[in-house]
Image: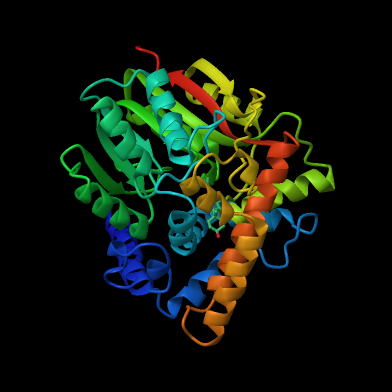
Length: 375
Ligand SMILES: CC(C)=CCC[C@@H](C)[C@H]1CC[C@H]2C3=C(CC[C@]12C)[C@@]1(C)CC[C@H](O)C[C@@H]1CC3
């Protein structure tokens, strides 16, 4: 690692400690959220400086370029702010899933991960890279499902610390390790992994060719790459202000510098050299239970008490009530400044994702399974 990189990494790490508190990685949900110190406001300001006064339609090319060239800062600030809420409101697996009628929320998340592992043909003791591993939910599940050795790559210190803690608690530290690094310049040698997967993570890249090119480089010849990509579908029309508003809501609400289309993703994979073995938009199968039902708060699809509570907290009523409560706590100094704004931003995300799903403008599960040629 160069000196400049190691200095940046140390600065991020120290900042994460100050922001989240020394023992925050041991805490969960609200307790972790309220453990942040006054620098939370600084992170909120840093994140929203990329978006403030830049409503869809008013953005200039310079605004967009600014987000793309600062993707790492933008994504880090986003996850420093949103990780606790993700874990509290969702799960340790930061992705969506398809649902069969009657299937539980957690079962569907795990099945979605198994499905990718199965289609990639991940075998016992394969060396597998998880690009943008979050707090390690999918890595733990895929490791126990396949018995592969997994390396989780992540650029966010707070998430890495949490990932390591959960993995140790599950007794999986011999099989899974977590490495800090930027997926546009991976800290790995050429051709060192048998397989690489990325679950709803590479959309944070400023350019898909960049991250796909790195994945191609670190894969062994003949190695497999499997991805669930976040893309706008081919029916998306960026020149329609209503549709652009949906994409913009997804960008600002989910820390994404710029949403791209399905064709962009397909072309980027081919351009870096991959052969596409399988391509399937899992959101387009006409499922009875839509992938976005939890964040739409659609209680009619719930089949158990546990899921009822989970989906209830995602209804507009529960989200808004929670946000008022957090605003009150913020006012009396019990919650760090900016917490409410983060909640409001996640509500923007949820609404845009649901609209994108309902209108078939967006999919979070564009699945590609690709192969690096043997020679
Ligand atoms: C950002 C990317 C690429 C992937 C994350 C996908 C999902 C796990 C998140 C997208 C929107 C998030 C929201 C929440 C949890 C995580 C997501 C579903 C909440 C339910 C967390 C609790 C808040 O009160 C409401 C949030 C709505 C959005």
